Image 1 (cartoon, rainbow, N blue to C red):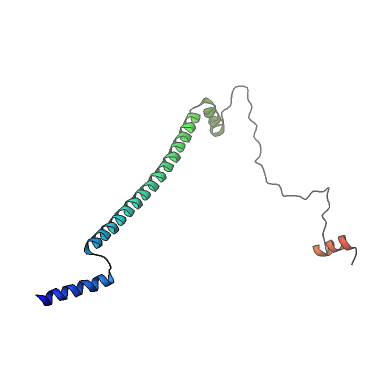
Image 2: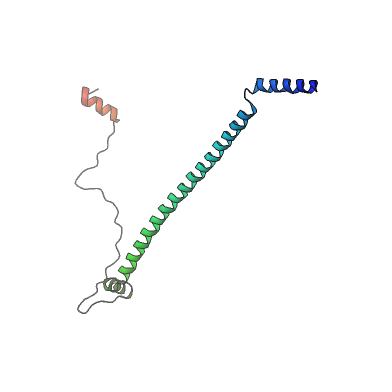
Length: 138
C-alpha cells in the first residue's frame, strides 16, 4: 500500500511539474476551450448566413428591376403608336394621304483628308525641332 501511495504521489508531482494546475482547474480550462470553439463556430455560421442573405437580397432587387422593365416593355408594346410603327416597318402600311419614298441604303464613304489643310510631313525628329525652337539652328 505504501508503495502504491508513493508511486501515485510521485506521478502526481511529475504531472504537476509539467502542468501546474489541479484536476479541477484542468477541467475548467477544458470547458472554457470547448466554449470558445462552440461560440466561434456559431459566429462563423451566422456570418456565412448573413452573407448569403445579403446576396439573395441583391438578387431580389435585380429581379424586381427586371420585372419592372419587362412590364414597361409590355405596356409600350400594347400602345397604338407601337403597333402603328411595327405595321409601317414590317408590313409597309401607310396612313391615308402619305406617300412612301424608297431611298437607297447608306453607303460608307471613304474618309477623305480635309482639302483645306495640306498634309505636313516632318522629316526631322521631334527632339531636334524642340532644340531648334529653344536654341536656334544647329
